[in-house]
Structure formats: structure tokens, C-alpha cells
Image (tube, rainbow, N blue to C red; front, side, top):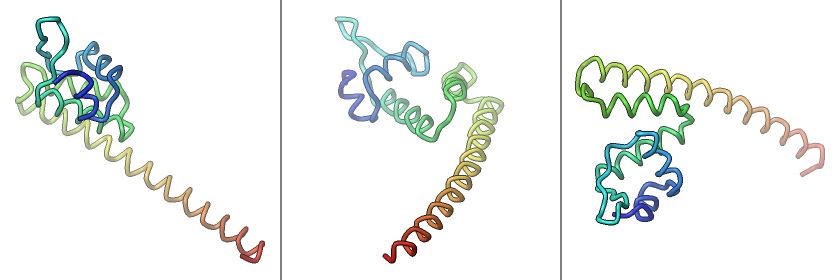
Length: 122
């Protein structure tokens, strides 16, 4: 699979994929005879993981740390797995806090909409 197909499959732009590759956040990608990147299923799976982590708002340095840990020589060691688990749990906590903030903001907007709706007799 070429980069354009990988972009469609992962929902990322080709530029973002190139950035992730240059930043060594992807496993080593095979190349064709022209030197172009090839994206086998494992690479597309990684792109999808990275895309999801970023969509949740995970900071890029943490995404890098996650990728480095998951692709390192000791990736399957209990210590590396615990480190990745801790990173994901910390991020989940931040997401829960952000969700609570957004729900409070939404409740405020609902109240303001109600005030304007009643004020206009709608």
C-alpha cells in the first residue's frame, strides 16, 4: 500500500504520515524499488493508533513516548508495558477532567439558551 492509500485507511494526511515516519513513531517501513514507503497492515494499524491518541488530545511528546516504548527492543517487558499503561491511564484521567469541564460549559450554554428563548417568547 502506498502513502495515499495509507492516508485514506488511517484518516491521516500524507504529510502527517511522513512526519510520524521521520519522527520514528512508526515501525521501520519497507520501501519499494523507487525508495517509496510501503505501508503493510501493521503500519496502517500503527497509523490508526497514533491518530486515535492524537484525536484524544494526547500531547505529541507522550505519543512519541508511547510509540518508542511499544517499538523498543524491550517492548514486551513488563516494565515497558506498565509504562505504557501508566501513560494511557494518566491521559484517560485528563480526558475525564476535560469531559467534566465541557459538560459544565454545555450546561451553562443550555441555561443561556433557555434564558434567551424565554426572553424572546420562543
